[in-house]
Image (cartoon, rainbow, N blue to C red; front, side, top):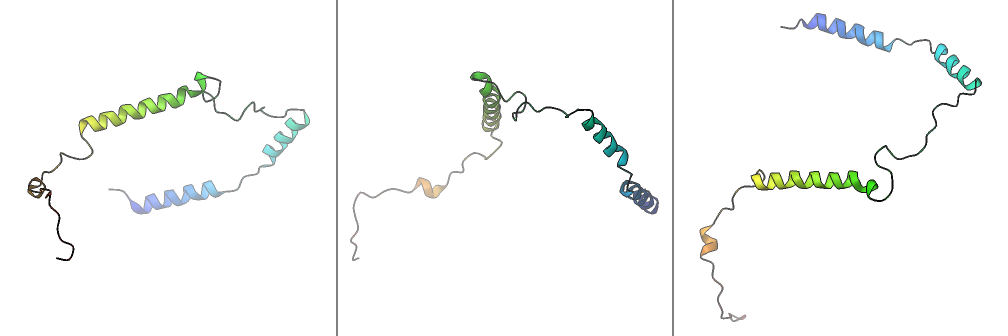
Length: 107
């Protein structure tokens, strides 16, 4: 059994430690020194994630793989019959017959 009071005190202590503010001047000073030295940071070459760019067929390969994977999953689910069961037959449907003659609207 878990000692609730001990757990609460440990949780309270952990939250206090996590919420304790730290001195961030060292980080700010390091960033300012790098900027003064001419370090502009990491250059961003594009806005496209790796593997999703390119030209021609290479550009469509991830999407094609996604469509194929969805088709395989859908086909497996359909073939296994996981969604829905066999259709239920109703005796009312079997006895329904269309009459070829009309009915008087005034009757």
